[in-house]
Length: 191
Image (cartoon, rainbow, N blue to C red; front, side, top):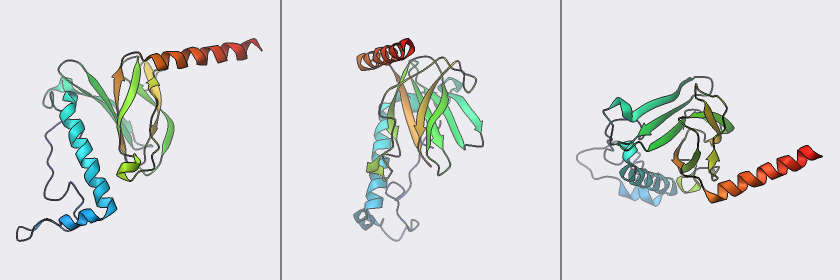
């Protein structure tokens, strides 16, 4: 749970999936990096570490209740949890974690505030050994209650995975897409 509050510890080969447990009389099994799956895990951990260093929301308020807020921690049927991590300056990351091997498409999730949410990390990326089913488009929230929140978005939740979103400023491409969507809807309603 790299995105959960608290300091992180990777120990002796966990960053590349060493099969054998660590033994003080032997070096790490670096040759396991010749295996594609181990290289994918190593890349995943490198990218996750880089994200952690880049995003103050993941570490600045680790021991302050203002740095963490549950969105949904009671979704037992779907085995999905979601929460917000917050930086000192108020920047937020929305984290969604699935603990089941089921891909969930068009999954509705409450968001902390109205706006646009862009995925910045997804464990289901092909470079990590996933299927590549990502949330490539910016998600625009709608005023539709979910998880005791006024606004929500629909996302694809990876099986046994994590996706992380950042709220972004209004994007011109999204504005054009919304205008086009409204235009198509208006034309359909005239028929």
